[in-house]
Length: 284
Ligand code: B12
Ligand code: SF4
Image (cartoon, rainbow, N blue to C red; front, side):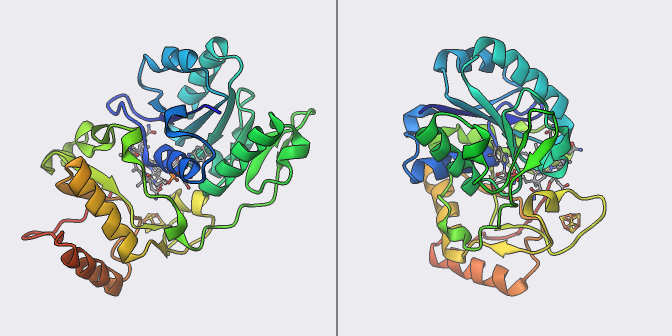
């Protein structure tokens, strides 16, 4: 089975994103797909449509924020013309917050945290060769249109309680520089010394600000942490294998627990990776 996963991201950012990287890494770890049968792409990349057509994937998944939803729909429609056999699905913040907006071009939507849902969908495709309602109905966290056009949702997907069971991000799937913030033209990010790399060490936020979309994916307020060992290992991989010298931590509330930050620093000291001098934590 061949899969392509695309991030609908701004033009300045030509690479993949952490969501698609995590989904692909998990599917590879579970043996559902071979590394050579995975492509990550960005919808901002003009070559992507033709590369996907050449690759002939069985499944194309889009990760989409609200700001790029209309663009992602147009991209998927154009892609359908060139790759008519690919089943196209969508996940991420926008569709999790507003599943009613599911466009006809998508077979289905994955709502909320994605790794388990995505792998269950791959198993469905492997075992049945399609996403027909009788096969998808047993998969939690999915939404699709019924024949009369109404939206049907399966049971909500529960959160992953043991985050450490997730695969480490397989950075070899994407050029790390594509994930680096130095490709993003936000003014304040000029303060970073390149290359900066993205990292998260927890999922979710303890709060519920009315303007914020974070809980549309993580379903309710609450923070789940990767262990210090897991995060230390992730940082060591970035440092040793990918030349990372500065990290942008994407956690919603990284310093929510002072004790946890101290445990993490102790882990980094054990690995001789603790930052020296000024310490800086930044969130987009
Ligand atoms: C990193 C980040 C960025 C980076 C992206 C860099 C990169 N290469 O990834 C940059 C700086 C580009 C960025 C820009 C913006 N961002 Co931003 N960003 C984030 C942040 C902090 C982390 C996202 C992340 O990597 N999470 C980790 C991954 C693993 O989680 P995930 O993306 O949710 O993916 C999981 C599920 O959603 C699901 N899933 C996702 N995609 C798919 C696809 C499939 C097929 C499946 C099955 C499942 C699935 O499975 C994944 C694994 O569980 C979030 C806040 C947050 N806590 O999520 C805001 C957030 C996503 N951003 C947000 C916003 C508003 C923006 C901007 C509009 C800001 C602005 N005004 O310019 C722009 C829009 C960019 C665009 N045009 O799309 C909002 C989204 C709101 C919304 N309704 O969509 C968020 C939620 C912030 C917030 N708290 O409100 N952002
Ligand atoms: S991530 Fe920030 S803005 Fe969003 S709910 Fe948490 S504290 Fe509020």
